[in-house]
Length: 218
Image 1 (cartoon, rainbow, N blue to C red):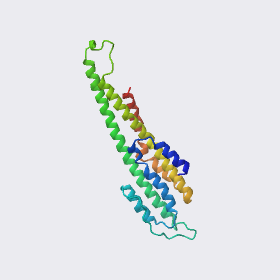
Image 2: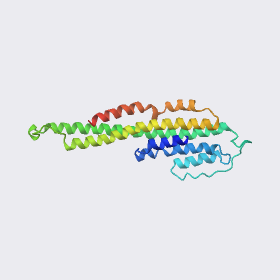
Image 3: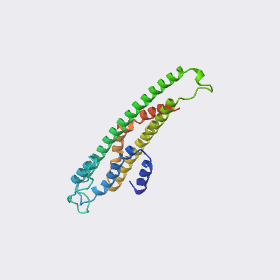
């Protein structure tokens, strides 16, 4: 990503829940890998090992051995670099699929639970005699607590949709910078693959569930 894109990425994610922000770091790490891939002093094998350490929560320190540069100082085999880079990106896409799908399903279950709680609270409130409401029926304290909890859930669900869109754009931007820097042409092919992934295709279901959750807050 260009400097302005990095700024956009930070701005777009800075107000998100910490759980979501924790998922953003490896994308910035991937961007830095483009520079390292083009550095003839850095071995590709060591870069992969470093990335896997970061994914495992270990120190991201790179332990690099000298690579064999070509005459112009770039890696000899660009196809190897492309394969290694897309392999790193594959890890990120898989992680994003797992995170968004599992988070969305948990949120959908929570929304259904709040809906059942609200129905039960409304049923109990209707059993109270009208004389208890001389100025007309008002929302009970229990119903208000359910409504507030549901609204908090709605904000998390909405931010998850935004999170999905942000990272689709981040992947596309990283790919474009990679192609610009290396001269390869993987963006169009890889982005078509990304469009078939769960963290993108689940978005419609996420929007539907989020709209239903919003209705519950009214």
